[in-house]
Image (cartoon, rainbow, N blue to C red; front, side):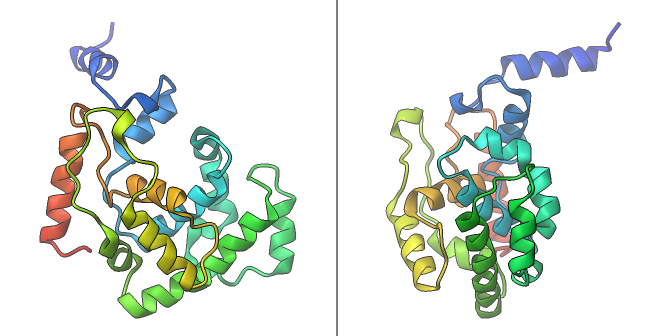
Length: 210
């Protein structure tokens, strides 16, 4: 017989209010609950998210999520310094790997973007200090229908990254990135995660993490 704590936890996950996009897949719900929208300041994690958003273009995020561990293995945990050194032989190796998205242009863009990520780290000290320059004032939303697909801030970020030589960084892709790494908090106000993300953002600002 399960303990009361296990029953309570099970009931909690059945009863909590989540953003509707999290659906009924357990892995999607876990991503929503513990990753999406939570402020990220680690350079490799930020680079991973922006790369995977590029790979996701034209596909479902669930597809990318279920291939993420394979992506991490193939792309050296998305350490920009390592990815920037990938050569033509590595590209061919990746194109032959059925466990990831085998798109030559997207693979090449990840390698290209790694080099430019290193330039930003050299200029700003970290990717987070650069990306959070584009953070808007965020108040949250009551309904998914009013959450935009891109914003003025994501357009500005897109323009700046393109000037720096980045690829696959359109304003819609970048707004998804900004949502994922907590630059904006687009959990619905009645979602159980919303207040936790707000508090994490406040703490990070106080600690000058970005």
